[in-house]
Length: 251
Image (cartoon, rainbow, N blue to C red):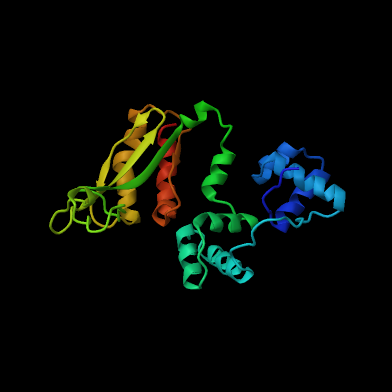
């Protein structure tokens, strides 16, 4: 039997409970965001041992100690937007060096999943016509000269100043601009350059001048959906009220 990844006790118990309620492997997997093969393995173990336990398995020991796992779980619970790199850095300061993949595996074992993965699974079977009703929006930073990031170069000793190993630069930096854009399956909407620091009021003003005209120009019709991330200025009450007003304006 193929080995499955380790699931936390709560997930294993839910799988067994849903199986007892008469659900099939695929239905349970879709509801919990797990593979049907994983669900089947858990249920077979439960039938054989009368408990949904994780059986001992061979392999390298876990790189993250129970204390380290508790530390990153506590941070994720307190700060849901914490990145894997943040957690890697926290563990490194505590004396444990691991990869981002190890962080992902540890979080999954404790029943945590990426919101992006859950969103993708939830909408995997949505018909194409549903996606045509969605208007997507986000901010993007564009570097005016080069890339504002560290670049690694493999070189021989004393070749650090060879032109092929260096990146041209300009005095006082190249600068950048930040734009807010919106797109849909029907085409691209308006671009807006963001001047200064954007707060909730500025975001709503940008929407007022660009979002609705873009929706009308793309002829998205009734029942369109505005999709953006959970930035606080995006989810503010005033912003939600503005978006609802736009939705009804096209009815």
